[in-house]
Figure (cartoon, one colour):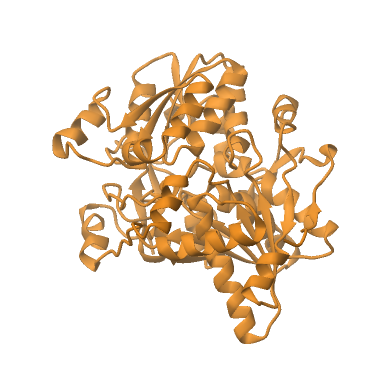
Length: 455
């Protein structure tokens, strides 16, 4: 295997500020609405769930938000993360495109998720919070928050989507190692979980259900706050350390991307890699194409509707202006558990509505095909979620070959797949199931919504 060149920044180049894209968006996002009054929510409505500093970040219009030194000190355990040029992958694809990837799998939890888990745990600690609840899909977020809460001495309760709890037991053991209590969702511990189990005792669970359980636990316990790993504005902003580092690393490489790609569940790693480049589009007239790669079995960006919807299944969260398949939509039990979410973050949804970003969907088997090719040429086994970004990079690289137009592609390799071997085993043994949504299945849950489509 030919050695690839590693572009990495010195420790002092870890960003000192997060980038808040709300300061540069041509059209602001619509406000979240209170689930009861249907009026725009204010800070007081969120205070039961989040520390005030995160609420301020959620609504801030400042372009740059300082990263606390205590957070940067923890970041130093793995940041800056490396950026590689995938020269062997380029040769395998026989493409004129140059392909780079930002590798977030070097974090303690093995994914990009600690970029926001650490500051969220820090701000809770600063307000004296003793306990946090959260949900997790494939387990990357739960692992990351377990790591962060352990560092800052906070108890953590994790509701892990049942299908992932069963498919990915080692991520549960990671969380246990860092001191978290992990429950297979839906559970009998909450009214939300009991309601779901009464309707479907064999429910595989979903991120929406797990969110309902975690939010309910936080809302009904005065000493507990809630933490979310994607979707919300402050979460996406924390992840921009990825793109900010990438800009400097691409400069070191003497290159600049034409296309930036991230897989898409709720928006965190896509936003992390793409928002700083979109900022250059807005402020400096750059023309970077930013593509969100989502599963065809959960295609909210490519086939959903832009309307107000709940962020959870039961309806406890604020109504968010989002591209959605309906909050009761039950995604197929694909192995990319982190992408099994019915809706998209409000900022990403507004950017898509304004045609400032693109979205593409990919089937499960083609994603694993792309991931295996990448692993065999570059040596890193990707997380099933990241395989969607790789599949998109393959598509764009082959398109460049067909058109004879050299392109520079950058994608976010958001995590490694070392704990996802059961998924790869299913692929190699021919047991990986492809899920195709019918039009009836696609629209069934949208028909239940009583909110109008946002024009």
